[in-house]
Image (cartoon, rainbow, N blue to C red; front, side, top):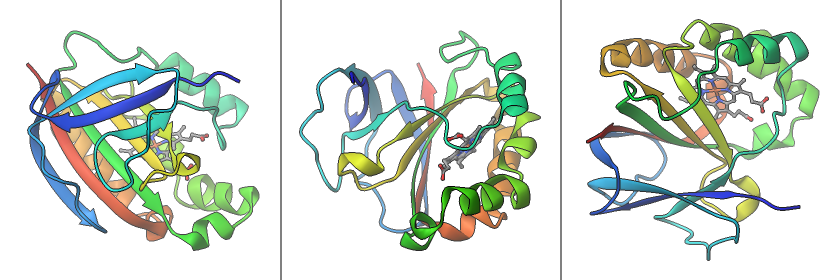
Length: 183
Ligand code: HEM
């Protein structure tokens, strides 16, 4: 099976300028002024504690049929010209989360935390891509990426604020919220 790896490389180069970093829990990331996003079909050599962060856009684990239709209807994709603001939020979850069964995780993620139901209202203004990295020997389980117009930044703050109050977030052990702008 061929994978496309997405690399987020911190440094002095890259299309996205870092405008803010907040470590919500766990260890911080090394400081960086810019982030470059590149893709590779070969697994790059892993760096366990810093840049680049590497993830794979993978299949959905929890989405049900009606949710998939609702998501697709609001999906405009990344790279919209007006979406010059972005957030990169790498996240790790606890062993207790991974010890649950798929059904138990879906129960917490959607039935009780309403992750999808609550977030759908923020589309299409906010477009997203989830990258998985737990199985790549990476320091995070997920790299989450969001693009929006600068005028929707406050709405994005509302969304992350809601999500961080949910039962799902009790399992988050490391979370860093990087905000970016495309020059
Ligand atoms: C427009 C807003 C959002 C939408 C529509 C959305 C939708 C989704 C969906 C459909 C999934 C499930 C994918 C699957 O079935 O495997 C998911 C997973 C996830 N989302 Fe969101 N989301 C949004 C915002 C956010 C935000 C702001 C964060 C972080 C602060 C976030 C973090 C995550 C994480 C970490 C997962 C993986 C959960 C797991 O597999 O344990 N999402 N999201």
